[in-house]
Length: 204
Image 1 (cartoon, rainbow, N blue to C red):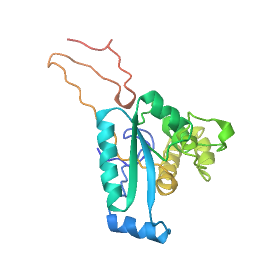
Image 2 (image 1 turned 120 degrees about the horizontal axis):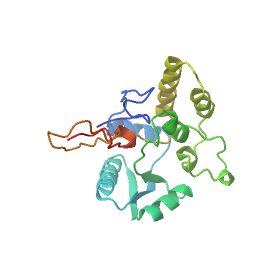
Image 3 (image 1 turned 90 degrees about the horizontal axis):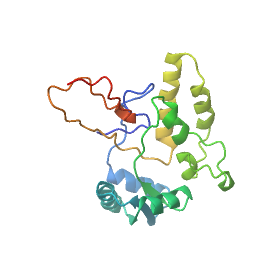
Image 4 (image 1 turned 90 degrees about the vertical axis):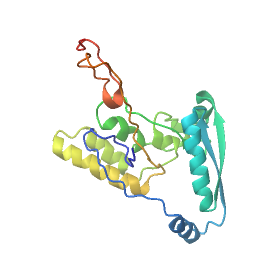
């Protein structure tokens, strides 16, 4: 499912705004405006077939705009080690929330209080991408402690709008998983985005 925001659907503050579309000529014009005549980058991807295929599709699409992508495939340990060490130009991967609160993603995608190499904040995706969030760090810190639910939701809407325009991330999809079960099985819930399954309510 196309989804261009770091909060998944159903989360407080989630939005369905998908403002970006494929426009090769506009991409070429933006590169020319920036004075970029040739660009070659390394993209790291883990050895999962579906991720390799996504990287290859990006390679072909970027090539149409004159950007050469060299794909490096490795084990999760190899590729993630390089990503966490800030050694990759580009990482093609997936991310999932750890708990059902918007801070689980806001606190890693848009929070980076110390962008120095010495900080070693490998758990923060903003840090891994060497991105000084330009004010979003403070907004994320304010949102996580906001007690008014409606105001807090709007804060995450605003954070994501700014994030889409300024961040080094390209969020493309939200993963959708389907569950098969027999007709006589009831009350089976696999936990949604965080896959926190409970079996005690299940009846058959």
